[in-house]
Length: 196
Image 1 (cartoon, helix red, strand yellow):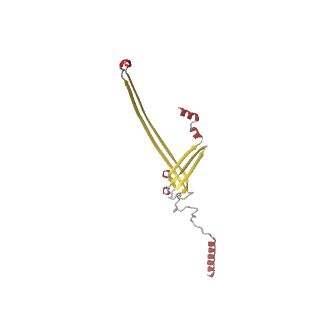
Image 2: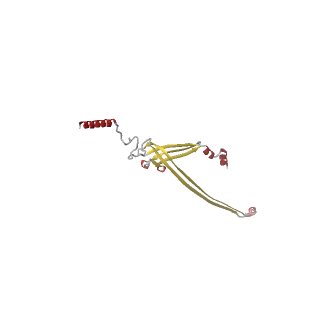
Image 3: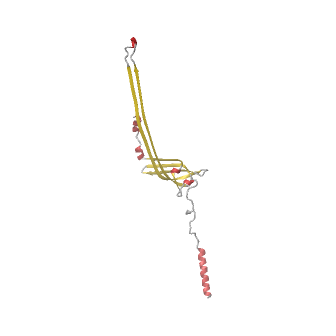
């Protein structure tokens, strides 16, 4: 019986020693390693980034028409008296008219996504944003620049905002390279177009 108690005591001591040596770690990752499902991942301070979905389109049409006409006439009767009786009757008539119509139309569409940074938080809580995106392929360079002001409530839960929700938006899209150079008119062609 005493031997059984000693065996149990020995086993308990051994179990406690093993448990003390083992380090306990949480099954949950720290906040620095993973974001909580309860944490809002939307941008909210200077330096935070968010994605702008650029969806811009514009259509403009203008037309003009001109229709003018002008008629003029003059008539002189024959002269009277010994000196003026040899002047015959004169009559003059002229007319001028012009009619012209013209129509111009323009369509523009620009769709892309780009990431921007919050550069300033205004006193009213709105964010100043700015970003540049440059892509170069086969010696062709495309650059998009965007600046503007957004409201925090316009940022979606996936940390995106539509370009149509940006106040004072300035979006520029420029390209340079061999293809762009080939599409530009030459100097001689431009001079001929100016002259003729």
